[in-house]
Amino acid sequence: MAALWSLNPYFWKYRWHLLAGILFVALTNVFAVYAPSLIGEGVNALKEVETEYLAPLRSGQTAVFEHAVNISAPSTLERLSTWWARVAPPVRSEDFQSKEDVLKFIAWVAAWQAILYVVAYFIKGLFLFMTRQTIIVMSRHIEFDLKARIYEQYQRLDTGFYKAHDTGDLMNRISEDVSQVRMYLGPVVMYTLNLIVLISLVVSVMLYIDLELTLWSLLPLPLMSVAVYAVSRRIQSQSHEVQSLQSDLSSFVQQHISGIRILKAFRREAPTAERFSEQSDQYKTSKLNLVKTEALFTPIIVLLVGFSTILTIYIGGHRVMSGDLEIGHIFQFVFYVNLLTWPFASVGWVTTLTQKAEASMKRINDFLDAEPTIRAGGEPLPGPTSEPTLEFHAVSYRYPDTGIAALSDVSFSLSRNQTVAITGHTGSGKSTIAMLAMRLFDPDSGRITYNGQDLSRLDVKAYRANTGYVPQDVFLFSDPIGENIAFGVDDASSPTIEEAAVAAHVHHNIAAFPKGYSTQLGERGVNLSGGQKQRISIARALLRHPEILILDDSLSAVDTETETHILDALKQGSRDQAVLMMSHRVSSIRHADWVVVLQNGRVVESGHPEQLLSTDGVYAQMVRDQALKD
Ligand SMILES: Nc1ncnc2c1ncn2[C@@H]1O[C@H](COP(=O)(O)OP(=O)(O)O)[C@@H](O)[C@H]1O
Ligand SMILES: [Mg+2]
Image 1 (cartoon, rainbow, N blue to C red):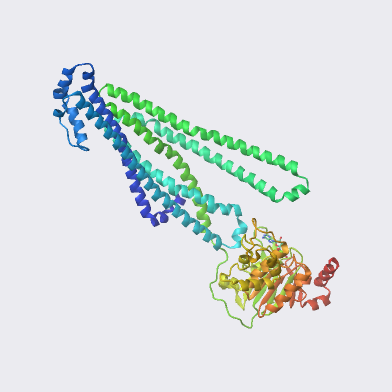
Image 2: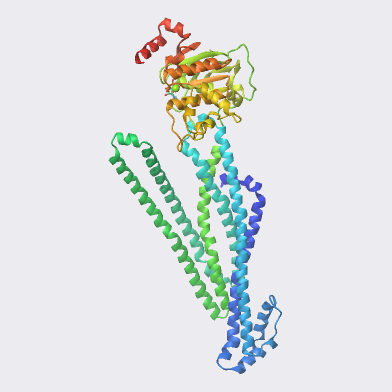
């Protein structure tokens, strides 16, 4: 239960909901227990009247009736009258002179009992409603708070964490795990409170009436708790299996629908259909198993309650015959046994739910306790100095998951109003440099400085606000194009968005869409070409007028003509801007002020492009190779 204890501050936060909930649970149960006692009382009264008055009357023994009214059983009438006095003016024995008087009185008593019974149930229902309104509402509030905290943590953690964890698994924290925990906060809390209050009330009323009958009629109920626990554990594990098979099935379908073109081109229809029916069959089998187990649930409860009822009537009957019990109490007990059914069954259910919630809460806590490895240094950004804007000093980096040494001993510098290009073949480490420059992770050794200050000491958020990053894998949100460009700039006006789009040479494409900048992207919107996506991503970076612009192979999917347009626009617009441009294509970088050539994560050459061309090294070779291809 250790993990669930961490929820206590939330209970404290919503303590008034919880306290009100406890009060309402108690009130609900008081009325739930009171109602059957009306039935018991009513039956006892009718029984007495029957034997004392009606039976003699029916058999024509008027004398016995007279006798009963006047002498033998005034106590019965008195008892009834005492009860009656609670709802109407008191009656006395003298009022019963004829059969009609007695019958009328009985009818009144019965009617009042019935009305009171209905009213008691109505009030019980009202309080039950209030219980749900407080406890379930509390659980929804806590669920909301928990989700907000998890989402905050998602954003606080750095890319290193996301590399080490599976996305689907992380998504489960906020959906699956939180709903498990909510089951604990809502239903479990509510049923547990209900259980405690109801059982103590009912059992004490039962004990007050008859100890022996109480013991016998309660005997089968703990068995029910155990049985329900066993069945619901089985249901939980089986439904887990069903869920995972179901998600396998839907991701199978989703993948093959998205890849339908490849599927058809490679003529894989028949084998795919076969694999689908195999998976589908597995799902069916496990679902049927689940249904079989679920089918046990109600019969077990009904069986044990039935058993309990039989015991109550049998033992109760004996006790009535031996004169230790009144018959109405048997009725009352049968009601109570039924009233206790759900609480006893819920012990098993609540236990399973609590175990699951505990496991989920532990996962949530582990996640919430994770600390980002990139710590914000918190120092304000230094203003421009004579130092380069961005400088790598003998930087090395190894990816912890694969152990690949992506960069070794890389040094270069980038100043204001300068374009530095990093080139090299695929896998040479260009993207790694871009990510290090964005401080998405920190170098293993060496230093990166910004205006002469160590990057790790500076406020990351402020630094990133000064940087425009166009990652190699373009990511656009399923939002309108305009919003995608304005991403991260809250108050971007339409003219500035357009200006950025013009600079990224994508404005004419967007303007050609019927809805222009309001065109929806993504699943339910238009699909853009790779080059268009890249240019929108560039526009997004340009809109911020960043001090440092990082383009990671951002022109790989645009044709050379468009590339020239964009590079020209960059040159014009980039007063004071420092541009770091990664490209495996040499045509993009021939106008750069400085070129760094990487091979297997090491700098093999660097210099002005013209100068490199004349030294006839790796760069010159790349230029020759690519000229041949074009
Ligand atoms: N997320 C990653 N995890 C592990 N290794 C990676 C990751 N990204 C890149 N690498 C490896 O690091 C090396 C450099 O990759 P990268 O910087 O992407 O090169 P480039 O951008 O020049 O193609 C490659 O060997 C690549 O396999
Ligand atoms: Mg790359």
